[in-house]
Amino acid sequence: MQSKLTTNRLHLKIITPDDLDDIHHLHSLPETDQYNTLGIPENKAATEAIVQQWLSQQQVEPDRHFNWRISDGRSRNFVGLIALHLGEGRFRLGEVWYKLLPQYWGQGLATEALKEVLRFCFEELYLHRIEAGCATENIASARVLEKVGMQREGSKRKVLPIRGNWVDNYEYAILEDEWKAINNEQ
Image (cartoon, rainbow, N blue to C red; front, top):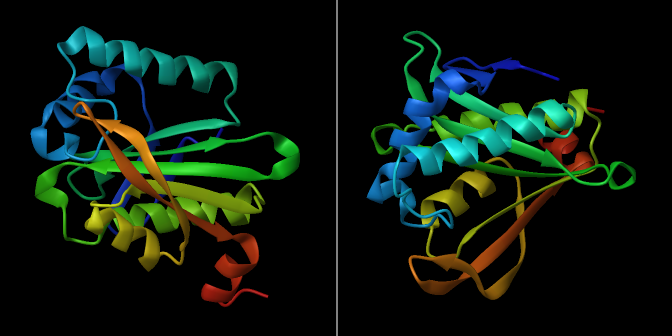
């Protein structure tokens, strides 16, 4: 399992039980819940159940489930989360998601973290396709996906349960050859 990834400004490290407080804080903010299907946890125990599920997946299938803590490269302060979950091996497919604390929005950090995860996907795991989705109203997340070269492939109607309502979702993907072309690899 790739436990650490590094960029110019960020440090990505596989989550551990020690990250529970930071993850609970992130999930408890109304701003980060606006387009999230998890909802705000009732209490810390609810967040702990989610984290335990992630940790269990990472332990049982360490080469298929990656949940990274994003930290500032200098201070090591918690910035947010980014994850990669792989599909069936023969399809060489993965799905990514990310969630940052509001004070780090608009600084290019989600884009930077996602670029590094995509690099890992295509250059170390040799995947063929990476997918992501976002609520159609989540313009900032859609921009992040597009900045890294992902293409909007379509939408799904009323598929995301968010705060008691069903909302539409955009589907994005990037292929290995597209990644290589963007990054001038041959």
